Image (tube, rainbow, N blue to C red; front, side, top):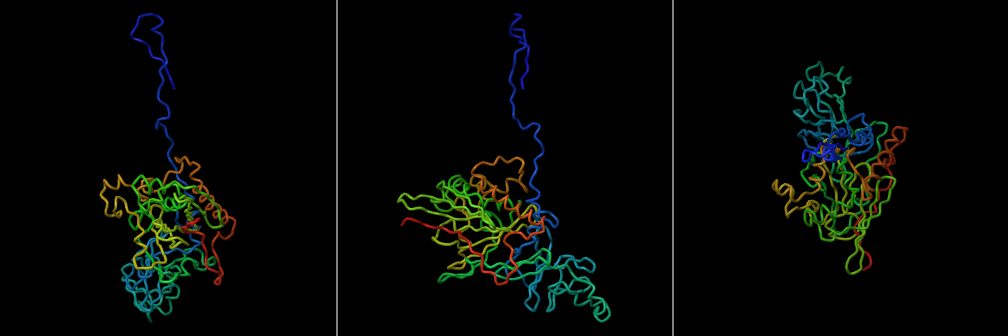
Length: 412
């Protein structure tokens, strides 16, 4: 926009005419309110992505978290109680007692289930009411009419898994080749430190902001390789040649880096449905197939955490791959150091509780992000059309899922 202003420096007729003056354009004034892709971010029951995620199993805790002390967990926006009865069976029930609504967090775990502190009603791991001590004969005639809301759980790889979807669509809990076939001297280790999240166990932003990060190989040499110093190894600071490939269940990303001696470092990683982080060790401790996989657990619309299982030689090996900034773990940094040495946590959380997708300007380097969003959209379409999403199986004898991911050195 422009206008004209009178000149006061001359009395001549020509100078007195209005002269054009250019104003700044493109300022932030008048911006439309930002918006986010609700169908891909909001995970509550009944939402598009919430219903999609409910068609898969999710890790909700370490196996050691299920004890005879009730534990509060929040999964996909639902508040639940995890426990293990005195017979050793894990259970996952809604927090509010079906009788009068007292929280089962204050319940007592017994041989047959969890007993409410208010009137003593007891529920087994499948929510059946098995005792009503204030009723005649322990409620033998009436307790069968009451069932505490519950979800199926299974244990595998040192984790407790839950299925929060429709009972008639419950798939088998998958097995993974990289966790089933162990090399000599290896054992499995489960970790709940949100490895890969770059911060505390619970990360206060939407799950998709992290899940998409797995499809973004170009942030590695910038954020992890130069901006905040070398967080992994110097090799990861080299800008790679990248190939993106869509698969039925994910995005396979191959990053090529060329060494001075002519050898080629080929790194294969990527996100896999429903929330898997299939990422080989960024410290490149060894070459070969991927050592660990992680699952991004959406706690609610504004927070997530990550559970990881991997093959290790020594206890604690998984925790040793955590990022270090300025030579320190995230929780050891001062506020000033967080500002000067940002990592994944700062880059993702600073986008906001849910990033404003309407404000993005995606470029060619964001191809993996676009492919991942399209993959998720295809699964939403499948649900709308009454089909099962990719990656679910109802075959208990199905072979373990195999990934191409890993760190590979070629041309030796």
